[in-house]
Image (cartoon, rainbow, N blue to C red; front, side, top):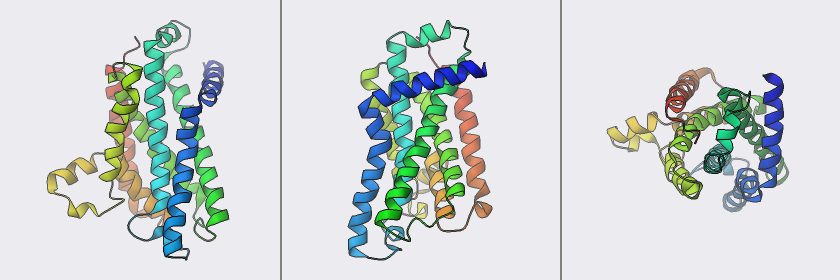
Length: 247
């Protein structure tokens, strides 16, 4: 089983790398946006605190975009595989459904780390002092956030009718979640019902956890956010296993 998982993961990695738009969107765009926004705000406030200042934390936005782009790419690939009958053929192999889906998750998590590494290298070169954060803790927070959002992505991937609608539907679902994450304005400004919705979304807890790690607070005061991400991942995975369609 483990051998099959690694072989399939390697195949999926090569397929992903050969798809220019998915590769650029997942790895390139968050880094480019980080550099562009960082230079924009850094020009107005030429200090290490410029990227942490209002209206939002640029590195956290870039990290969230890395996670979101990984999910939208996943939704598109699953839709293409389903429409092309690839999922049906894979299910007929000795590989279990868990192995097949795990390979996709591993590929997305690996490229999430690659994207974060490029973002950190760009940040340390262009904005000295800004990226002096505990990278291990921040990477762990980003991976947990990505995993939680990916589990929600599997639900979307299960419901998307065709590959043509995969990108617009996933974008319509996930990008508005960023607006409700508390990154751009405090959640206290939202109406009560919208705060309830926001707290049920993984992006809200992802931003809160990563903000804490980024600002030096660590995980200590944000175990509730980490627990919420795990719970959302568990519930979403349970739902996805029920509604996932192989053909």
